[in-house]
Image (tube, rainbow, N blue to C red):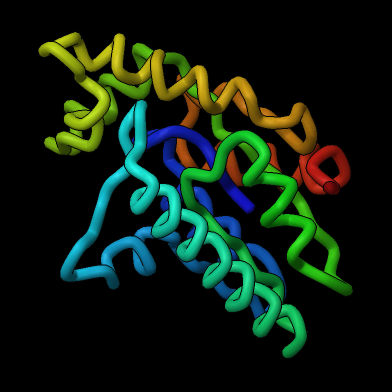
Length: 179
């Protein structure tokens, strides 16, 4: 699993990492399941509605089933998504009879804000209560990431290219990130 905040580089790093594993290897981005809910989609906020939490956990369970399916077929599988707190060990524990690794991309607030602006996205809009700055919204969401158990490989990727991050994961992280 590759996790981190929005605009941390999870999807890009996950795809590149899967391309360096195996073969066979596959990558799955949790946004696919998030975007499947077309009617009644409820997004996460700092104070989420019960339906938002239900949809989030449904997404995590679906991704775990998919990961297990590919692992059972002999694939290396990289899952990238925003998974934080106790949901991280719960997701990893759902995978059986496969080596599990955790990589947490943890760039600085300034780096995430710059990436978010650079990609022209507004991913933090629901986290900007009262018109707060994007930096404040990132810091609020970062509090949730800080509650993630300190397992695996945590990388400050503020000044790295995605390719360099993958090199670091492969060089130092595959042992360190073993869950």
